[in-house]
Length: 368
Image (cartoon, rainbow, N blue to C red):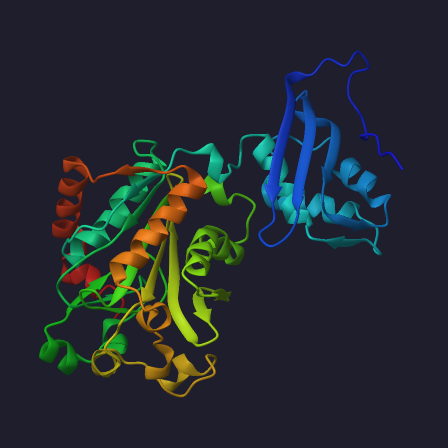
């Protein structure tokens, strides 16, 4: 059966701006392709295609019809809602969804972007104070949002033992003062949410992605985590580790949790997505420093905080530097990323930000 696009618009076939084309590959699913014209600010001559499965066959025409006539400024959620409302009750979508169609439409309109639409940079690890690492996350996210820096992947490195707590956590509830003092721990608050990270030199792998929010346009907050870390899963697979996401933001293997992610979206359109993965953590010291209670562990299927630490060293047998190198290689190969470095201006801005914000008691204790 042939499905012509459901058409509206001027009979003479004149269109504003030429034919639009958008594609979206559902992670673990199928490819959705959308072609249409924009006539008078609205979608016309819409044709949805792809390698997905859909029942009944005629539902494809319903999707085309639902999209036809929508304003080119329609929000992603409203496009999804229109597609869902236009489908018959017995429709079955396999390998894609109304949200996937919405993302493809937004990409065709240049409201959403794909990985290949950007020139990516990679910054290799360099040893910096933890306060500077945290401040750089804010500075570089702002720079990408303002268009002054390409979207960038940066790997952290540090020397001083630290605890980095989430934006909404309480210092009093997250750390043991005695353990912090005994082990000389630096406690720092970051701009993203999520839980506390215990970090000693060489004991974990931390990276930050600075990206425009257009890359996750139409993707739910929950789904954006796995979407942004698909390359990491590929890198781990290359190293012999079969990893998966445990909603919302944990990365795990069959042997246990190996990492966690956090995000922050800025008003200027920049977005931060960063991950810390366990490499060789001193579990005894960790529980002396962090308050990890039973409630935190209640949905993790384990009674001990120590069992939640499943180091990459044990599962790969590789040096930390080798794992980081493999991650950088996979990311660069997938997205055509090129090497970059921190500029003097970015480092100066981060130092200023530490003085004004991240190094202050007001910021660290902003949550009682």
